[in-house]
Length: 288
Image (cartoon, rainbow, N blue to C red):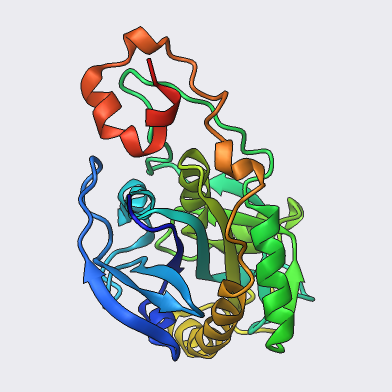
């Protein structure tokens, strides 16, 4: 059985950090196709870790092209029980400033073109998403952020849009009226699939801009986003190093058994090939 480890997903800059030892690459095959890139395995703060460049090294994949299912399934195959995520977002609130970090505990889905579940085709499961991130992991990220001197906000709603275009002004104003806190394009599917995979998930929303709602700030553009994101990545690296040492060896949160009562398909009706394909997720619940 693969060693249990901490998954880390974000830009390639995240794993170009000090302190990662015994580094090697691994290709993971999944029933859902290829992940965004090879996984980079190593040890950080004495803990086994696996890094994945969300958009592929060189940023080759746009948000709607990401194979979210393969990415998360790959972490499951490797033995990940926790996933620390980092991604760029726009702020929808005055007090959440560029270079700040928000640890969201809610998501709102505005995507339309993405696969968001491992299930279907003869095996149905309905997991709870009332609290879509792991509260324990979120608290660990928050405390680690405070320790390294970052301005971190605990809790809030991340609205996930399709992209790759940024919002129109009308959309930005409406999203603000809904009470969301940050806007991004990637984390919602990761959270849903991590829950189905019984992996604890929390994300650092790295604020780069004020979207296009702000009256006195410049409109969001790629050049400005990338410039601020480079600064945020250094902070994210420091948080991940600090957080890795705080993650417990064993889990007591509900994330670890999210599928226990979620599978509703009669066991005899599940196709045999599907049982084999999804064995890393469901085998323990389909014992005859």
